Image 1: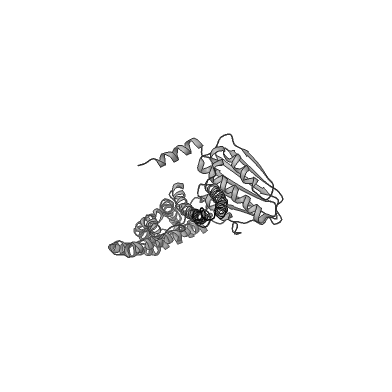
Image 2: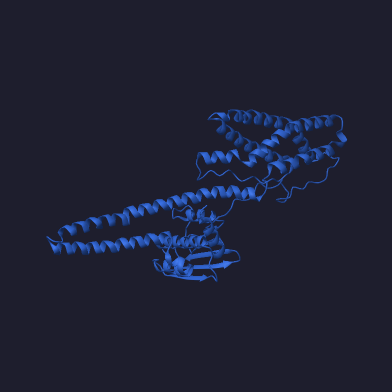
Length: 412
């Protein structure tokens, strides 16, 4: 099976029978063809649809504005804007069906990794909803006008009604494209980054809790026992030197174990070998601790930014742990190279396969972490193997990345 995490894209296609992305229509004719009747139906529906939208905007949003002096005002206004988004979606669907206009759906509002107040603020400043509000305000007089012209033309200007319908619906198409389509790619990326920020915050919090737990249950507990043991040895130093010596020897062993635990913990945060010698040495060290033989090939002339190096290192570390625990493989390989402005990682094993993003092995967490920095995560793991995991990260030069990090750390 192949699973891929990538940025959301696309929207419903164009009219039936037309190539995707092609919403061009034939020129208006005197004949009342199928498209002409669709345009007439759209114009006749403009009045009731625009009336509903106008009443909704005035009632819900103005009520929310007036109640902003109370505790329910802002949540009510945010709910009203969420409803405006739904009205915009219905108008886009109507335009696709009757006018043949292909309009991409805006990115959904991010909901994960954020609290109530951040979500409320994002709703209140949602540009998609506010453009829909403007659309509904403008549409009422236009809906009345187009309804009246179309209805009159059905009885008075029948021969030229196709031309009239085409001209009026062209204005409708322009309004839909101008106010109900995503403004540009920047808006889509902002929505994605808002969502990814929540993932990064959750991941960082989870890592901090893990470090705190490891310190509390491991090195801290050993150091407490060490202090108690040395205290007892001090008391027995004069009374029973031999017993005191045994206790000191035991304390010495505890010190070694505590140091090893602290080294392991530090390696889990950011290994010194990665900082000093780069990915080649760091990944070779990780591969040496894997329970199956691993061939490591790193083809990098220069080093990426420290943050990208760290993500690459921990991605490979997690994948090799999964190979040790779950794959049943006899050997594995790790390849790292640069392709233009991307850092590519490929980890392969000859195990039994069947790896999935939702398989409970931490794959989804890796995918989320890479997605948060504009990376990609692809799993090709059919039943029976082999499993090939490919990860891509943006290449950021070490000099510029470290300079930016250093600038961010300067006191303000």
